[in-house]
Length: 304
Ligand code: GDP
Ligand code: MG
Image (cartoon, rainbow, N blue to C red; front, top):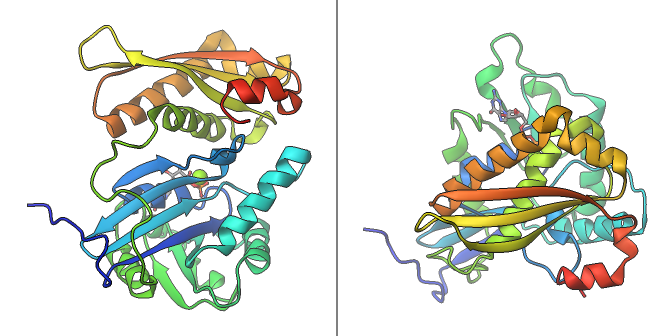
């Protein structure tokens, strides 16, 4: 039997755990491995969700909200300045920060950059745990020691997001540090998440993962339509990826449409796993120059 958590109990603990670390350290994989459900935060601001895919782990007396952050990229325009600000504010609200490193690779400049971010955005009172990931991959070199000197860590863990080793200890340590407080999100069902936003965020995430090095700047992903699919119980999504330039459109579509197909396939699989039903995704790429400055567009997407 599933134990119903008591949200109002004064013995309930809840908090935000933000993951920071260089790209590829395994932050997103860790969030997936540690959480039961995944939600994209909903926000009345344009594209806030791109900075926050969250995972939630509920226990009888606690709720952990994991906040996954993308790599820090250079600030290029107004919207990014705005997003950067939100991102920093968000990290400041973290109750615990996990600094994620790749134990199978030496400490690099990317790690130092991530560490510097840590110093800027986290209050000195926030506990920071060092999480050295990829412990399953350290046979030919274990670099976990190198990371210990990066900052004044409260606690150190060696884990593998892939085989799950060390994660129980990490979660236990997180729970010990959670502040008292009621749950932030519904504890039982995922019914009031917004699948349209969630689907768009999943597409965006896959797009960024697959086109890592040539990420076209200024992407907006929007679910235009969601309805029952032709098979009973299935769901149909029509999703558009908006880009600012024709060249970006080409990159996303790829040779013979292969990239777009791949993005669509991965997103479909992920959505099927999360929503537990058959999914169809009809994926489009459209060029909308300067969409960030188009108030009419933003409004039509629900961000006014
Ligand atoms: P992020 O950029 O920090 O979010 O990193 P991702 O979660 O996207 O992971 C980057 C890559 O590392 C992916 O190919 C993952 O499959 C892989 N990865 C993540 N965690 C582990 C781990 O514990 N062991 C191994 N062997 N690979 C991992
Ligand atoms: Mg990631």
